[in-house]
Image (cartoon, rainbow, N blue to C red; front, side):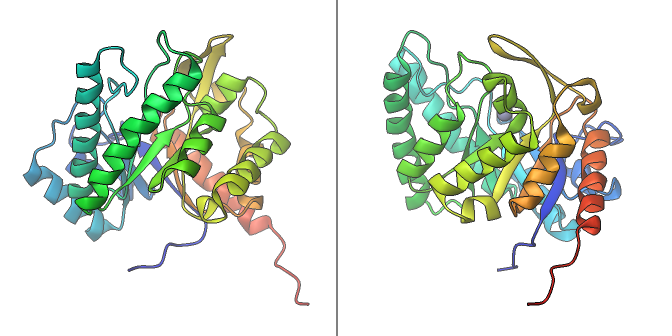
Length: 289
Ligand SMILES: [Zn+2]
């Protein structure tokens, strides 16, 4: 296996705006030309990619050395009132994982569901049961992609930082997708170097050092109110302190992938990548003992 590089790779969620074609295959090559390193394939409106395209996307990602992840459909709800709908969501998540692996994605990000009429405790248990089943099937099929449960920005959605970390701690094979715009919008206060650093230390404490060394992160600007996230914004239009956030990621020694979900996609992703490499260059070299 190729060793995972130290540090962060930057990429976009979905096909870059400057990509001349609306195709995932073309997007892989275009991400490289844009100076980025990662791409999250969007299965958010359904699993429309056929097996042949998936195989071509996988080959292209290897050829261009682009790190691929994927995002499962938005309509998955592992806490649906209706049992049939819950079963459908389980199937859909599993099929998303199979497709992600076929397309060469190492990780599949998903939104677990809504509380609906249930308490947070009941919701937690329902989602845990569903995920346990999915993970067990994924293991028996040896699917080569990790399941990443996302921290969610709306308070009606399951997925506070604590819920996500507890589930990942309980279920072997489940990993977090840390969406810092969502954490900020939901908690309302996580917006300084110290806050970001504390979130990262909490992840390390709950899940171990490896969770920071193989992190999968989402970022964008965000508009929010007391219900949490309203919509994504470009970083400069938002009050999210992304420079302090990047510094905290670097100081905490985080490695892995940062996927930018700003409306501007590649423009913000490139801005973050440049900022990150600038602050790393400025860092004094460690002194010999
Ligand atoms: Zn998401």
